[in-house]
Image 1 (cartoon, rainbow, N blue to C red):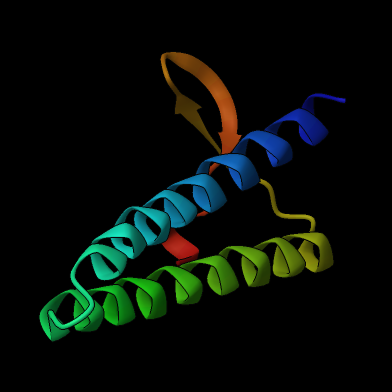
Image 2 (image 1 turned 180 degrees about the vertical axis):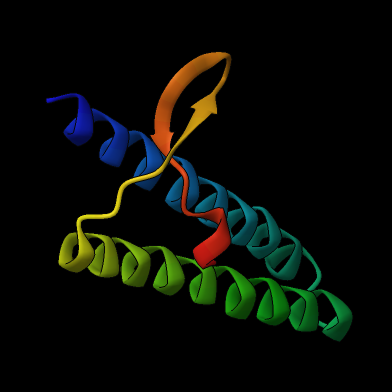
Length: 88
């Protein structure tokens, strides 16, 4: 059960950060439709964050195949999150 909790915290953390970055840029593009710099920024952020989401999901697939689990502290709680930073 602890492993499932770590998996969920890790997924939530990385997917939430990527989602917030993309959704934070989108309103700027809507407010300034002619500002191509904001649109280019949104494109860059979206490409970077979707690549991160893909890397996170690929890391989980590799972990499942290898059953190699490393943990990391999360918000002061030891071994709360799976440590996948080296794989990203």
